[in-house]
Amino acid sequence: MALPKWTDERTQSLVDFVGPEPISQATVAEAADELETSTRSVSSKLRKMGYEVELASSVSHRTFSDEQEATLRQFVTDNSGTYTYADIAASFENGFFSAKSIQGKILSMEMTSHVKPAEKPQSVRTYSPEEEATFTSMVNSGAFVEEIAEALGKTVNSIRGKALSLLRSGDINAIPRQKVTKGSSKADPLSE
Image (cartoon, rainbow, N blue to C red; front, side, top):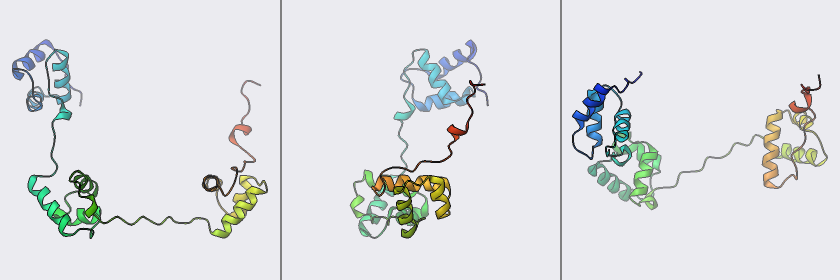
């Protein structure tokens, strides 16, 4: 939807509507509804005209009511060390809040010591220890990426990724080279 332009008539309507400074975000929202435009457009126009307008970011929107905060505090202390953030989110207020918002609220209440740490997911091994040993010996003997990929039945990209991983862990000293690269197969456009 395209926002209407600020004509002299619309600008005067805005000035008549807003009243004295400073102008609150509630007044900006009402003016935006009245003039059928966005609150951002109204705020911007008023600031350009020299009015003092409350920043939208300064208006706090509380996610948790005082009652919900008290209930959450009680729930967390009663079940200290029993639930993870995800478990709390699922059982608190019928799952209304996400695990991230629960985590943020508990952090702001300085009650993180009462939350059970989540189990770290186990990484899936895509290379067996035998494949890693073959990989390492081939790299150390100077094999190309394509040769390693063929020997292990893996893609070139998978081999590159594993080489980077083994380089970081110190198992190999350098990433193996490729026989054919895109750069070497391209013709020089200036040589024609």
